[in-house]
Image (tube, rainbow, N blue to C red; front, side, top):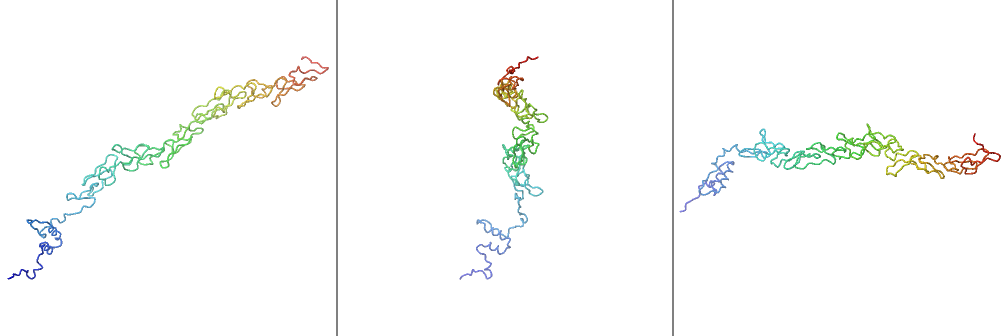
Amino acid sequence: MMTDTSPPAGELDAREPDTGRCASAHRARPLERLLATLLLCALVLRPTDAIVLGEDLNFTEYDGRVDACAHPEVAENNTCVCSPGFTRAASVCTSCALGKYKEDTGDHPCTSCPEHQTTFPNASEASDCICTFGYEPSGGTCQPCGVASYKNFKGNNTCLPCTSNATTALSGSLYAADCTCLPGFEGAFDTGCSACPLDSFRTAADNACRPCPANSGTPTQAAASEAACVCKAGFHPAALCVACPVNFYKPELASSPCSACPVHATSPAASSSREQCTCDPGFSHDYSSGPAFSCAACAAGSWCPGQRAVHPCPANSLSSAGAAALEQCICASSMFMQDGTCFDCPADFYCPGDNQKHACPGHSAAPQRSSALADCVCDGGFEKQSPA
């Protein structure tokens, strides 16, 4: 006789499926127990392991003990601590100050960078330390920018040079505006520095180039002091630069005295060359002794009125050395001078060699080209009388 093994009526729905206790726990317990139960069901149990029902776990001892750490905090040993690059101040994690860094987690202070180094915010490594403004890396340390350079940013870059012909007053300059033009130059760091032109100068105290005092100038551009201004040609130093006096000259731009003209020569005031010295009348320029002339007596047979002029005497005339005028050219005897020309002495005149023609005495006559009074012969019926 077959025995009925079917479950009693009303118990069919209560039968546990193959998963048995897991399904029963799911039906019989609240939702908050579901996750724990499912985890237990997922365990690979050995035959000897005891099965613990999910409803038997006690979660109340963990209530209020789990929390999330907010940036810049991180969890460490069940505590929220500051991340690298942050330190705790007034119960708050704040970024390490510039010039400091922090490599690990925790609430301890940040570490200072070496001297003349700084950082960007939140520095978390020693390598975040970089040279600060006005400094550049050198031999593992940060050294100040040299004179004539600057650095207006932080970083391990080299300093920037000033514009040409500019420098800085000190080392370690931070800004391009710290570059100023060298003495002898004018301008600005952003427009460039140009040399002072001739006859001007600029000292470190001047804003721009200044002209030299009156009658002075500079031998070159870019003069850096008033001392570079020296007297111009034709002027010599006194309280200021004053003109060379008459009969003196000065050819160079220098603080030197004027030189005297050669003997028997004269020059106007402020003469700037020996060539402005002119020989006096009766003298001529003589270059026989070298490039610097002297004044020599006008040669015989010529006359020298000064101002470098040398004129030969007219034909049939002669002068002694040092003649200064045409009249010093004497026509040969029996000739006279008229308008700078020697003519034969006319009849009834005699010409003794003084450039003049002299009339014979009354009642006497002389042939052409007569040279002496004796050449005058009395007319018929007249005779010469001896001087009383």
